[in-house]
Length: 216
Image 1: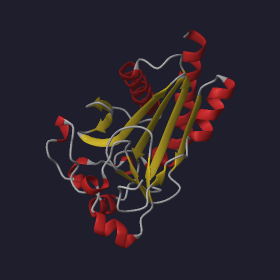
Image 2 (image 1 turned 90 degrees about the horizontal axis):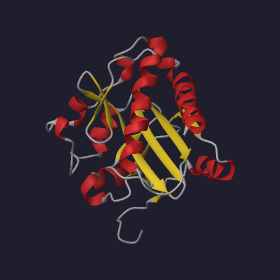
Image 3 (image 1 turned 90 degrees about the vertical axis):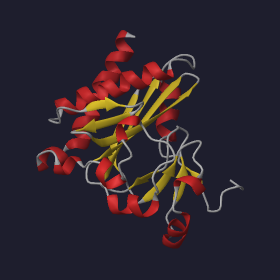
Image 4 (image 1 turned 180 degrees about the vertical axis):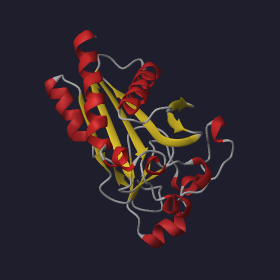
């Protein structure tokens, strides 16, 4: 990307899931711990606006760009990465699918022992007025790809070091800095719930995706 002052590669971690759905016509759900520390830009993100560039360059942070929208995020192993890929004909219904899968997330988290989660703004999940997940949805022909970052025990210090206040924000953020806006499930739920969340959440989301496939 020639106009960007730092190397930016493509965020392609979910490509094998999308390919599997295209080949088999069946939904795929994956929930896993983020494997590394990195910054991921949204499709339309401008690094000079959304990053503290001198710090990012000095720290040699890997930067990648996802196909979905939204602002820059910092991923680290304290995050769970949720991917839901669905075979859906056509290219329409972005808002409806965003709302549907966000609803699945709220229901599935409650079944995992995390009650009280709400959808705020276009794509945020919050608990006790703090953001505990952000999501992006990419719609291509025949595919709905929902990707969320669930904040279990995030490195908020790295977010504060590398990301300035975002250039746009939902009304419910109310101008709060990162440390006052972002939550951490590890500090809000019993340790066993946080520790075992990935496989439990994956199973519950997969059940909803399979039911959607069977009932339409």
